[in-house]
Image (cartoon, rainbow, N blue to C red; front, side, top):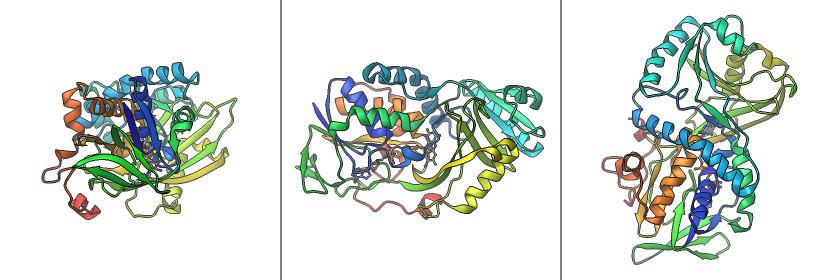
Length: 381
Ligand SMILES: Cc1cc2nc3c(=O)[nH]c(=O)nc-3n(C[C@H](O)[C@H](O)[C@H](O)COP(=O)(O)OP(=O)(O)OC[C@H]3O[C@@H](n4cnc5c(N)ncnc54)[C@H](O)[C@@H]3O)c2cc1C
């Protein structure tokens, strides 16, 4: 079977990898492979650290995908001979102030009830694990099963694997015959036919595709370089500082990814105010970041959905969509690509998972309806 995949971010590439390993021939279409949201993502694989009230179904998906990660990484290494930068190094969630600590400790019970490992630590115990933490932090929780991966290493390795099967053009139209999507027109006018077509273009819109309840949720990310020989941090630090979120994700080479901003202001450029706040909050938790040097600042939009769960489903007999991974697309790559491949191949899938990501779950809004996508204001009502 020949499958055409529109979009070569982490989702399109992971789906191509999954389909190829199940015997399919794949073609990807993307003018700027790996440069969308996947380029900015911090790569936290943090089902426990991401726990929030009222998102039980999402947490089930996050936990299931987290369990698939070691095998996902091993399979990529087996096929390509290159191992993505995957670190099973746990996460410390830190509260800066007593009020932040109360919010943090409220969450521990919920995290444990969802089956995630979350252990309350004294600040002194947290500092023994991470000596660079400030001496006046108020509380800490260790999430042993939360890990991280450098998403650029995944998109880089898979991008090279599929290099000769990526058409570096935009998809400009889905071509239907008798109600079924049969081919994709690209920006040069080329027609690419497939037995099945997967739309995995993140926030990208392609004429002929259904309107989806997606909205851009921008995030600003700062990458800094610390000393490689004496890394400032050995595990991910997620912080709550005056009720605001911040995270620091250390990479193998001593660099640190700093982020957590979330904006719906329509501005695709880096926002100085948010950057300033991130740095201020990060310095409150890890004062030594002032000695790091700046590598990069970048802003990208997360493909947000009304309930933060992805949209994975069949639209017609030959079109499947797989998008809307919101703030969890890196973590959800193994599960999302497997569910997408199940749909493409008509294989039996976990019914609970398939229902949780069904694009038709939003009452009154069918994925294949020709109605305009709701505005950001509508989503927030
Ligand atoms: C600041 C930030 C931090 C994040 N941190 C994390 C994290 O720590 N952990 C986590 O799990 N997730 C994180 N995420 C979320 C994660 O990055 C996304 O959910 C994920 O990257 C979505 O992948 P994607 O492949 O669907 O989208 P993208 O990476 O955006 O890829 C979509 C691709 O489609 C292509 N495309 C668009 N339109 C067309 C078209 N017409 N024709 C052809 N191609 C097209 C684009 O060029 C792009 O390459 C973060 C996101 C941001 C922005």
